[in-house]
Image (cartoon, rainbow, N blue to C red):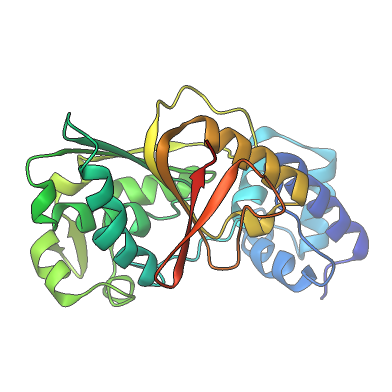
Length: 271
């Protein structure tokens, strides 16, 4: 049974209010497929019955379950490859020349199950010019479930097959039954915490590099501008922002300058 227009409208407004994610018309199939497991777990015959109860009993736990079910958690190791090549060959070496305290702080927003922040740390640790440096990485996500998964650092064979070079697997992972666990030395460098990008940020400190990839596409223009403005406030003046290939600051927040490095665009706070 297809989700009713009334149920879809309720879920769409709920998700937008809680996360600012915009579910356009035509996404009914996605909402239904993501909510079927929740409906069955709650003992309902279909999604409409589940949403009807949800509308009458809006407990924080139920609302959180729905929002997390509708949050896209697509990720892979060294996703899209080119941004990580730019990070390794240009961005980190450039920053290293202007950091006499030999330390770097990086933020991976919308980190999902951890592949992106761990890929960033592996990239930095494999650079001889950063040997002995203090590399700190904050990884955040809206979903507490994803944060818990990332904190465990354990991935199936199928997951490590998605973009992880064999050399990195051998060097930075250990067997854990049928799965693989990333080494403790890498996990120790990553601080994981739940954070809603659309709400005022807690005290985060200042970052040299921010990865905010493939998340702005889910927000409306006003929300994108608000997020980009607040990200700029926690960036070092000479820092670098990485967005997804389909995302840009241009025409959204003019406080950024676009810089083309190879085939990748990065964004710098406008001075």
